[in-house]
Length: 421
Image (cartoon, rainbow, N blue to C red; front, side, top):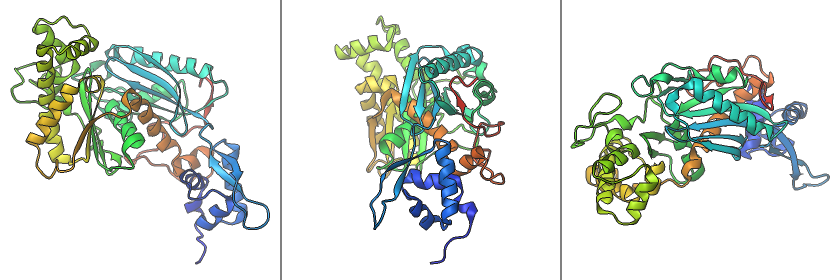
């Protein structure tokens, strides 16, 4: 077979991809797969070694003579800054280049105080975490935020729910302190991707993740990829109205949105109206475990109303699995049972023939995993690696939306060390 002659098909970034995927783990493998000459392979490998993306690993099997050195992706060759912001709980962490969590801080903060309060706090926590890992090269940052996000621009769009965040382009605010590629997505999208990639990718290609916590939202995995829609608004099931919701006014201005009648906030409100003294979901858990009939009724009703909306999504999307995550779903089995009941009653026979409805396997850590993978998928894409190393000036890196595979509005930058200042 003739050797391939297109260097553009075997840039340094493409060589890294081959090593990461295990498709080529020696210099000889790389030459055979790409058709590159030995000097060209040596040049690309040396560049990856110099930039801490690859290490010489254990020696490979010998076919006679000296065994070839094996090459391995070095996940410790940098860190990514990640933050999964929730309506009431936020997780801030450092991850390695394989997405593994290295350090994390959890805190409670009202995100509706706005980006001017929340983002500086998140960046200060990153600085503290980095202080514990001196010399770490920061290669990218990723955030999940509880708002609709125009992904290509990294801009939040949620005028009726989180007014203080509306129209805010987050990447420039982060990059001013940490000059690395910055990516932002809806919080449930990153949780869905984290859950899918870490726990389901080998089993299915289509998954619906529904987060039931202070608020309700969904992330859709279709064909193994997150489905964002035209502008990033896919998955906003929280503002789909239900029947017989009781005429509850939602924060968005509409009546009987599922978020206003089946979320954790709604469950607490309804229990207080029935005379139960509950100040948090922990109080509700105590009542459920005690078998309190009134509490069980409220939780099951919330599950059935949520199931009504999930059933419509199942009919449209036909996922293989519906994963229920978030504080409420993870703590209340009666709610999960109510969702199953409604979905199987309201969805078509074919869409539910092999459908699984189950609780999250990763739990709260899914958001951190998803944020890290969002960043890593972009900064280690072959085109982005080539751009950041300056190996191929004529190669343009592209994101899933066709825009730059880096922080929107910012050129690809080399990693920064320590505090990123």
